[in-house]
Image (cartoon, rainbow over all chains, first blue to last red; front, side):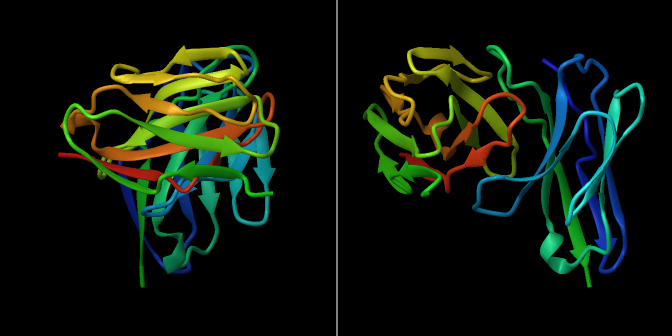
Length: 111
Length: 112
């Protein structure tokens, strides 16, 4: 299982770009990298997924270097509503592979 | 589609009692899983299933049983509840390989 390491917490002011990096040194060839967001008292929800290079959607970008041993979630111009815990998840759905979450990064956005 | 439905949302048990947390999904997802989340902590995988009739243990399986008789349902059983099992339980499912996980709203369990 690919273990992930993230910063425990981060603070940011509204309107700033936030980058959260996740380390996954033992990522396997068929593993994808997926990021989830969790608000208090709710289940996590999908933000973005990628395999290599850069992926962008309407809410975030995901940067993955060539060696794929880390990934960076980029949130442009954060607002107070982006205050949440962000999880990096590495794994493949094929076969009997469990999906194990790391400890996540608690992002606090300050006005 | 209702997505992933968990019942009950809240439950209080006494030590030694048994109960079943229900999880149902209407998306025809093969992969289903149960996580627990203690206050201020991350999610820990209890059990998971890659299809009907197939289950396997996650990180913290002790004290919990699961079964998967249908694609739609994945109940989690606590045979003899302990205070250490006080937590919020989340059920999640995904479609095939590499798909995103869809989570239920959670079941908050307190064991006295």
